[in-house]
Length: 299
Image 1 (cartoon, rainbow, N blue to C red):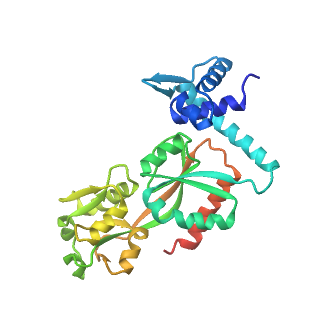
Image 2: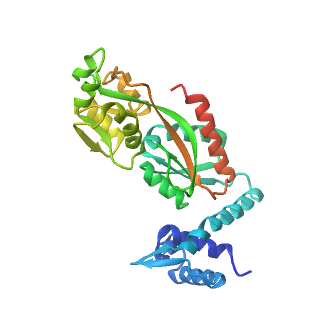
Image 3: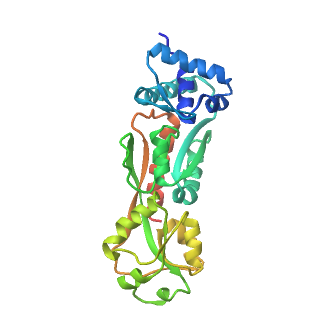
């Protein structure tokens, strides 16, 4: 058989970095050795695996078919090595998460995981939900945690945790002093919302637009943390995860508005490539997600 794990590892790096030059840096190899390994792999398979687009190498249909199979073989080989090496060898896991989850929930998850598997190190990559889903589909992360449903066919999406959303205003806002806020009050208020592609933005639109119709005054802001600070400063109102705003609510700077809209809930999802090899490290992390739901669902 002409295939080697080294060739597949180099192929994976080129697919993830988009060029033999960048892949060679990531692998600490020469560019010529990286290019030669790709040439050998394509020769062994008798197919081209990449199309050249400008200076980038982009997976073609053959490459897209091979990539998940290659990653499964590489991860299975790593699992075999791990099983025969000392228990103090440190495993690594690449977890992607949307910014809200990354800022407010991941610290809790990492703490819980450290108690379950002390030797497991987690690299955390953050972006909006659409970014994280794309990274999971490209197998550049092991698992992603996102704030809304996923529409990419390459992924397996598992409902993970039900998150509560609340509509908040500054304690000094006139709406905060009303015993009951009407739908017209909400329609007329200045709203601060997340950018397109954010799981929070998608879910807020899905939950609120049936009641409010088109908003009359909105501004898009690139992070939930920035939104909550602007709301506390009296710039507008917003609908955010309770995990984001609970500290300023407790401090008396934000108030949850009393309105007639039914309770606002959204489902958080754990996603990974449908062909992803479930390593021992990934299994430990999935167990931590389940433990989190059991202990934190009341928050």
